[in-house]
Image 1 (cartoon, one colour):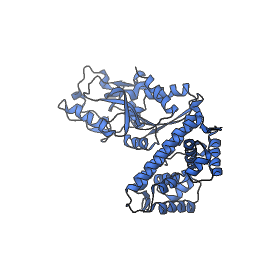
Image 2: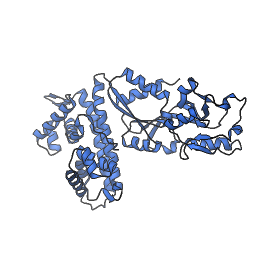
Image 3: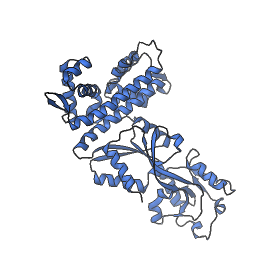
Image 4: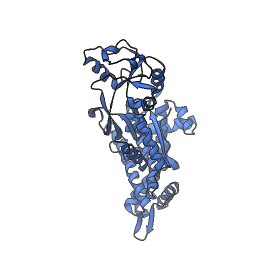
Length: 410
């Protein structure tokens, strides 16, 4: 499934207009901006008007001393500059792989990327590995999409996709372009929210990635608090493996990731905020025979059937080390999963023991459907918190979610 996002107000069609708007804001004059970007003054005027109509606000006050930004214009200019920076970075990265005598220039690449339709096509082909499927998503004919892609490749002087059995696979250069394209659309997605915030209304979409521990009562309460306070905010959650969530966070497809934090050396380019500590426990169904026994030791449980996380899960080595520190072999799993839709029913209906976080079963523990065995798993504490991309400018809606999460802390 495509992860790409179509910005509101069809702003993906107005990247060139944003560039023109930025030039006018800098020059404070239609005429001077027209000279700077080699366009007719009438074309510059049309671009500014088209952008204002799309956003539904005035971006400039037309004064004798020039074009002065309104409050809305100032907010839009911040995002416009960030979009231009992403496109400049994309051009610079692309040129690094080209020979010095290449006919492709930075300005030609930047002009090529100031087209939301082309960027959307790149993203969809990279996601779907199929030109016809990408064309369908964009309401284009396959021939039209193929021609557009061929023109991009010709302008850039190299192929962007390798045609293989598994479909169209992006080259390394294309992957970099796609990442920056996604970040451009993330900026566009936040633009409407920035404008609404000026009038005191917090609105817009927030996309949050959650690991299994992120899908807890703590986090859902924070979402409920946000929606109650700001009814025009729309929250979308993405459930996936941590590595895939972080990839989407880096590209701007996701605004925030909530879950177990990794070591700082694995978080380059990210900002992590620890919120609280969690500890693994051994859970069973409430009427399990072990709940009626007296004092228990970990060694008493080795012969039981176990549900433990997958081998590549962060908690797996912690569990193994907890047993090894007692001179015991790690339990042999009957089931390896971190999926709550599987773990929950197995825990409630079988005699298996699950090593997991009690935070994921708050309701079941309070309702006495599930019980926690009185055994200690040493050194299984881990930090739970928020992760955002370094350098990201989060929307007011995203900041509202973060504040709600922080407000849940004791």
